[in-house]
Length: 94
Image (tube, rainbow, N blue to C red):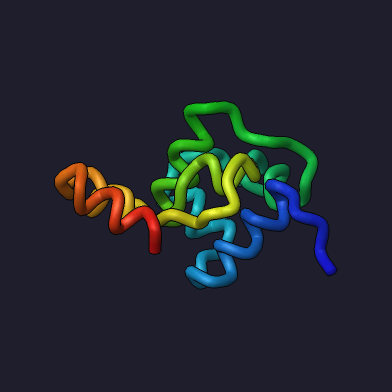
């Protein structure tokens, strides 16, 4: 069983989205050596790079940092924001 770390979550979402390190460089503008450090567990991103990674990988920052167990996508977040308060409660219970 894999330990739940930023590194493993990053690798997992990259695998699921079929995104390679070079793709992340292109999508985020983050230097290739920095991406490599993230993937190899040698460094964790600061807020600005974390936001870029989450956006490129269509996930959220909290999930990447293990602050949340829910892997919310940007589409789910946008959908939730557009819902009325009563529908938002119903949506969040799913």
